Amino acid sequence: MATKLTREGFEKLKADLNRLKTVKRKEIIHAVKEARAHGDLSENAEYDVAKEEQYKLERRITELETQLSHVEIIDNEAMGTDRAYLGARLTLEELAAARTVSYVLVSKEEADLAKGKISIDSPVGRALLGKKVGEVVAVTLPRGTIQYKITKIER
Image 1 (cartoon, rainbow, N blue to C red):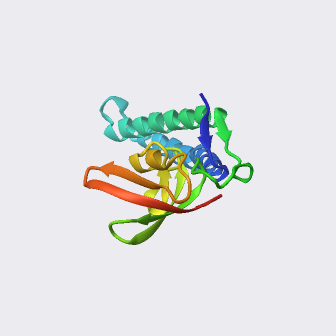
Image 2: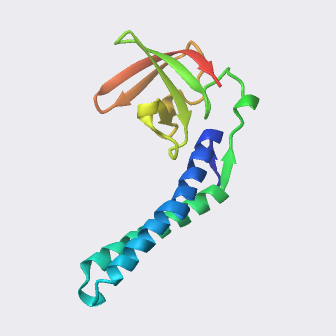
Image 3: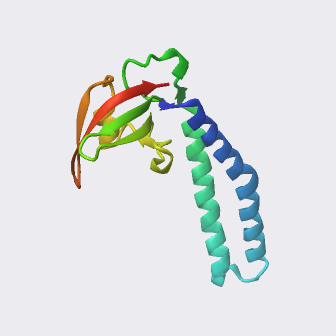
C-alpha cells in the first residue's frame, strides 16, 4: 500500500535519507573504527555502542528506502477546495475559546504539530477529513470535547 505524502513531505524524507547515507553513515563508520582501535573487542563497550548505532542507522535507511519506493505524492493543484483532504490547509474557529487555528492535513509521516501539520490519523484530523467550509466538527480528546467550525479550506 502506498503512503500518501505531500511534495514537501516527500522531499523532506528524501533529504533525511540522503543525510543518513552521506553524513551520519560516515560518522558512525568512523566511531566504529575508533572503538575497534582501542583493542580487545570482547570487553569494548564503546565498540558495542558504535555497532548498535550502526545497526539502528542501517535499519532506518532501509525503512526510508522502502517507504520512499511506495510513495504516492498528492497533487494539491488538482484537488479542489470544497472539502478537507490530505494536503489541505484549514482555518478553524475553536468555538468555546473563540480563537482561530490553522492546520494542514498530512500523513502521519509528515505530522508536526509545532508547524501546524496534523495527521489525518489523529482524532482532529479524522474528524476534519472530508468536511466542508461552514461545518462544525466535534472532536473528543482526553481533555474534553472541542468544537471547530471550518472557516476556510486552501491548497
